[in-house]
Image (cartoon, rainbow, N blue to C red):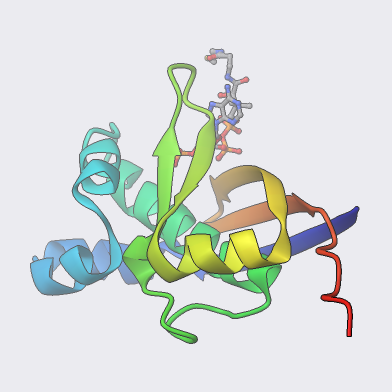
Length: 137
Ligand SMILES: CC(C)(COP(=O)(O)OP(=O)(O)OC[C@H]1O[C@@H](n2cnc3c(N)ncnc32)[C@H](O)[C@@H]1OP(=O)(O)O)[C@@H](O)C(=O)NCCC(=O)NCCS
């Protein structure tokens, strides 16, 4: 088994500016409708910006764990979806090329942790992967 990990840090003010300017095309390019629903429901003046920043960090952290980064090898930002369970704990749903890459690596478990404080948001992603057997010959 192999442990794959990735981390990333994003400035919350960047997303505060994006929301204040109503840059909906950028938001729609980066975040799914479900992610937007989760983030826009966050309370407080910086609640939404913090959660968008943390989710952006999570997508980059996931790209690092997969070894591809994001916006490369056909992996789009919305192929990595950051959702929350009933207790508020975040989890990842991979689609499209991100799912294909995870399957290729033999990923069978993904964990994600988010935090935001002091104007920054961070994400840490861990994946467990079975080494795929090499084809004989
Ligand atoms: C989960 C908890 C540790 C978060 O700590 P915090 O210092 O407040 O916030 P952080 O900035 O470090 O982390 C926030 C992220 O934690 C994650 N999180 C929330 N609930 C979580 C849970 N049950 N398990 C794992 N992660 C969780 C979320 O991803 C959240 O970011 P998001 O809202 O953008 O999705 C804390 O709120 C807690 O212990 N909650 C459970 C108990 C509770 O609700 N107590 C009442 C508090 S007054």
